[in-house]
Structure formats: structure tokens, C-alpha cells
Length: 126
Image (cartoon, rainbow, N blue to C red; front, side, top):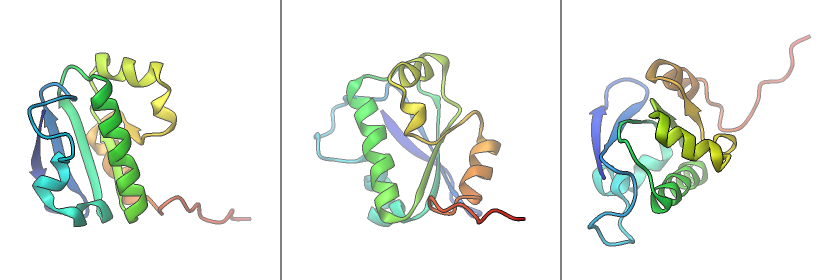
């Protein structure tokens, strides 16, 4: 799996995966997003497109969960979008759509990331 920068302009950083999401030739402790953009990336709003990936294995699922946790812990936001049907099926079977932030497309993902208040919901308006 490779992670590539799509855009660094605007309020959100856009990246994408390419190839199978999971085990690769890298050492197990290396994190592709951090290697590409540095540790500070976890405090930013990031959109992750999976449209150029077609498979995911258990290590790929673990990687997505680990990324989600790193962003949450650092005060950032990770929104996954454009998930191919086979990968979405795996995530759905594991009920990960309840944990991960998944949007159907880039526009929806960007709207969700920009509207993010880090888990806080605005008070009800009367």
C-alpha cells in the first residue's frame, strides 16, 4: 500500500491509498501517513480516499483503526471516503462504520471534516 498526497491546499489535507490496504514490505512499526507528513498530521483535518485500493486485510483494518485513534487522541479528524464496495463490505461486516468516520464521497467527507467540532455537539436551539 502506498499513501499519496492529493492536496494540501484549503482547510483539509487530502490523501489517498493505492493498492491493497494491509501488510506490505515495510517494517511493522512504520506508519505510512506519519512517514509522509510527519507526526503533526494527526492534529489536522484529513480526508483519506480509498478509491484506488481494491482489497483490505486484517492488518489494513487494524491500520485504519490505529489511524482513527491517533487522529482522535491528537485532536485531529480523519474522514475516510470513496470506499470501494469490497472494502466497504469488510468494514460493514465488522461494524466499523460505527467507529470510523466514513463518507460516501470527497465532498461529503470535506463537509463532515470542516463541520467537525471534535466530538462536541452544539447546544440545542430553542
